[in-house]
Picture 1 (cartoon, rainbow, N blue to C red):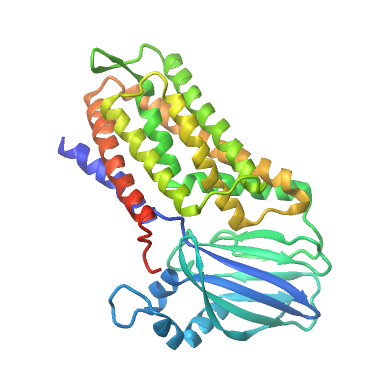
Picture 2: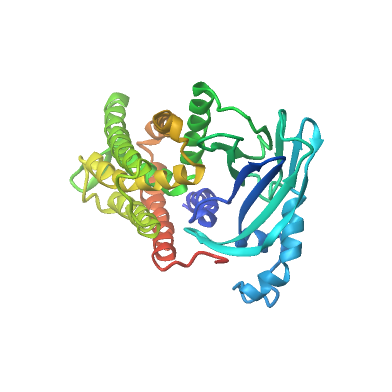
Length: 376
């Protein structure tokens, strides 16, 4: 039994630090003659981690503490964004005082920069290296407005795609589709609240409840049908609200959405202990999937939807989310089916695991509902 708890502790420790969305920064680049104007929003919690902005160590950043280190913040950022045009580096410098702005996940420093280039012409490349040395999952979300372009292009910089070309013409439909498919897969894999909700609903799929006891299902086909019901209901539901929210038809406050998502994980996990909803878990998947769709939509809002390829981006992101889900199911189902008759699965994974998930999600719920985000 001790081994079971050690395994569970190891498995669930990592998501504790991911109650809020992963680290992102936001860049908006626009050309003005041979200068590229840059607005760069960087989370204060990230800057505090690398620059130790909280001088008195009380866990709360003040505007005074941030302002005193404005030059250090600007120097740190400028050194980690290199723009080149036709192979020649552009000179990046501050163009306005540091400002603060609040995003859904906390306070951000807003840097106004200007990159002076000899000539804004292809090949125009940006090399981004902010925070990669301390957080390889960090991303730079870029909105690039080419000269004369009606809508900006969305690019995502990561540790594996740190240098990219800023195209002076709109990307092809295939490239747009590929980009948003990748982002959909990536988001479901790093969205621990979405994953834990889905897994909590899938854990009992290889078992059946008889006389207040869990018993193993007779065949893989029976388990697969149950998994298919849950995944399909979740997919249909979040696709509906993701599309409606991304198109601006419906909008809900981010704090409410994230809190309800955390609450859905709590209920799904507790249901495995009480089996209140047994044979119709797909209904729970559908109802709460509607809320999870709004969570997915917030990611699309951060990425920026290209207005000239709106439907393509939506389709690509949805396909990516589904591919990410299928990968999780493909890894989960054979493992669960093989272990379904063991005490390790029924007690250690289903019951103890669900209890740990419920406790973790309860903390997420409190943190989100009462706005206890760190370093805000």
